[in-house]
Image (cartoon, rainbow, N blue to C red; front, side, top):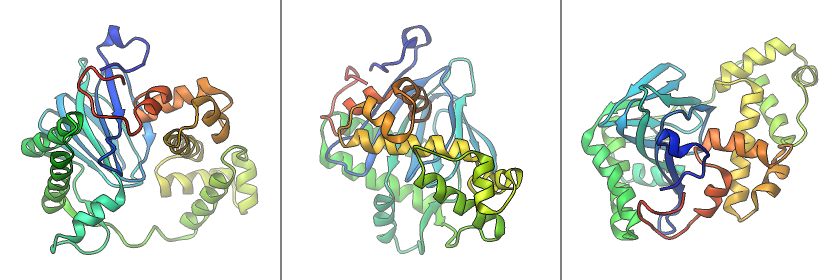
Amino acid sequence: MSTGRAGARDTGEWARHWQYEQLPGLDLLRAHYVRHTFPRHAHDGYVIAAVTGGIEEVGLPGGTDRAGPGSVVLINPEVPHTARAGVPEGWAYATLYAARDIVTEVAGELSTLRGTPGFTASTVPDPEGCRLISGVHRAAEEGNALAADSLLRVVVARMLRQYGGALPARPPSGAGAATAARARAVLADRLTDPPSLEELAAALGTGPFALLRAFRGTYGMPPHTWLTDARVREARRLLDAGTAPGDAAVAVGFSDQPHLNRHFTRIVGVPPGAYRRERRGPGGGPGASG
């Protein structure tokens, strides 16, 4: 697999982030990262990842997890996190990015879960779970829709049965959380023309440092980091729809395509051009373009 990233031949890094058209609502990532680090970001849906080699260090709100071969990493929607190699040789993994409706549908068939489904553990030793996750990838790459869909549902059901629970029904409350939510709404509305921290704080009737503290406490990252993540998410939606990377960069507020390339690659794990080429493409083996 090719990563489309300069230096891959020197570091041994490669990645493929793609969609299998028979599995809507699911993104697949298989990769080996050495120098690449993921900055703090969050996902709309769920992350279910099988570490197959090396060590991945995952930075979560409660601390840092070290996940080695045979470990499954589980991250709920909108949970801020980072990732990097925990050993010099990096880490390899197979990841399922599952939309909320996939997990909700499976959870609805399990009589043991009530409320909004989620994971109560972040990193668990589960070699069988890893085998199943890799099986979803293998079936998708072979174009075997029946096996891929079946294994996906088995994986999600296994994770929910063994490590599942109900997510909190209510968002954080309090004046700080309310101010942070208002600030986020302003940033989302002004994605291409955001105010400065001082301007944003003044508009909300608070101080810059108080806003910074409230936003970080509510969303796990400062406003500028959230804004970059939001821009990349919107760029992904545009690329999914067939928009060219250069046009997507301007549409989401980056000054030019190189800025999109840099932030997109850091957060998503592959460059935007490689990401766009793989959207709902046919299944392929290890030689597929990444």
